[in-house]
Length: 443
Image: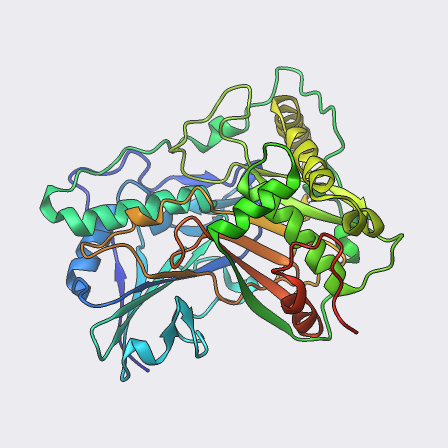
């Protein structure tokens, strides 16, 4: 692979953006998110648009999302912020001297994905780095692999998926493209009551102080290797799994219950040990003052279903689904307002809050973390010749972290990308497609 060009692509504006030059402080939701770049890969077989067409579409698509062309910075008050300085998006061009079919089969890469997306900046070097970086990898056959990294403090998964569909529309429609007008009022996500009154303990949940003995501080950096794994569940499997639950449930809930059971068995945890899942919950429609679906930024909190290992393995699917559903239901308007009030008081007291979100290289065992992109409309990331044939989230940096995405290869199916300790991979692969609720890996 040879990188042939590197450039900063700046958005095109017919008039200066109203927020141009602003220093936008990170909201409480931004600060609770992982302080890291998120990587993803989109695969498009030939024919594909030219790099010039992709970059022209990018110029038009980034314009309504000025945060993506900005930079992380620290304002005069010492607050971490996004400077909307219009410095642009980093775009790399690369040529790969092989046919795509030699490295991609059944919507998966048969070779390493290293080098297909821009190198992740070290954690201490995020300030000043481009918040959106893209690598356009051209294969000999004409196929295209787009590798992307974006910083989580700029946008959550829901927001970034909206940007991707906007970029695809801009490429398809060219000069006929009409830019959307997303909601950019980040301050509206965190309006405290006149008398802030936190009703829940948000320390050791979303944030921790320097001296707090939170569970997240007990997570270790593994001595074992972490392997990224993709589990592919067909629509038929999901239907059969829902039948096992015995009550109405979402695809996400039943599959999370299934994977929680299987990874717990593969880890061979002690029966009386507790295990929990950190479940991302989109709060846009849950707050007292609902935020528009097109809000661009972060507005995610987490639910924490927690059970003893013996219960995860011994309960029916219906029982584990119930625990997941109950935990998600507790992230309601009252909880969200309590979170906002907590942050307001912490800011008044000038407290330094550290997010409990895991850092890169962490081992979550015996716990898990899950994000869902099952509402992501992949068919809308159509650059003009069809949607991507594969969507990957490579190199998940935290053991126990997993992401649910719609399968590109099996209509109605789900792909689960997860980071697993290398010593647990064989056991997980042995039982992951078994609907025996109490299946255990062979010794």
